[in-house]
Length: 320
Ligand code: AVI
Image: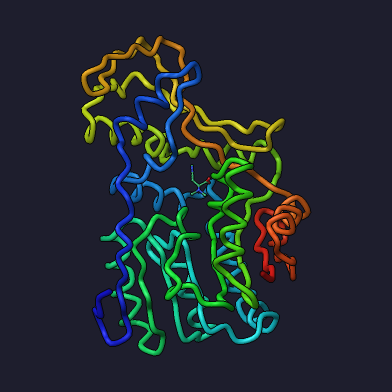
């Protein structure tokens, strides 16, 4: 535990560094090759994602920000005065600024795996919000459940924006929501963003933007592997594929081999035949009712749900 500023304490939980080579080798070798979406997010990938969120086709970020801006006071009235906001996977801590402004809680606890990103963002926040005490926790937010008791306080408002919940597979999502319920504790609450089902054309456009940002973001997962593991993917011969799968109510992202890809996984070589698709991401889309049902299954009591006039995105408030 380090006191970095009068209002900023840093807790390093030393998130375990996974064996990337072993993990990637396993997921690429099966009959249905895949890559975990976390491989999108190296420095280049995070910068590309930031640009995606500002692209005209990618409606979720701006719609959610609009909802937070319009309803921060109403949510506050519904909640009462929260003492602590906890944000798993806080990243650059941008969206929470709206809540810190409107709610003036005493504490904010961002949890983020990238030490550098966390330190940068929380130092800036500490300067901008001198009356909020920031407990910055460096940890893998999927391990939020294993938070030390000193940082688990009842009555926390857990903030999980961005529809990142849609990137979890259904059973992992159910477990993660239970973890958030536990983190919020008795008397706590959850404020969470969930992207909504809509016309396929609009969903497909959001993941196939005209500027090619999402394609570059998807392909960057391979650049990332080439840089870190020297996999030798011929990225010029890989194609971004993204489409809405209505049977599963999810956007699927894949990378398709346009020629036989001879790749290196440490000492081992692997050939991915032309036409093979590497599944890189699912982004599930919900209805207001389907998401409320998942909240209930995780032990929450839904309090309210706010949506925009076009019904693009939903912001759910639920009591733990
Ligand atoms: C981070 N997550 C909510 C994004 C999404 O829409 O599922 C990731 C993304 N993938 C392509 N574009 C954005």
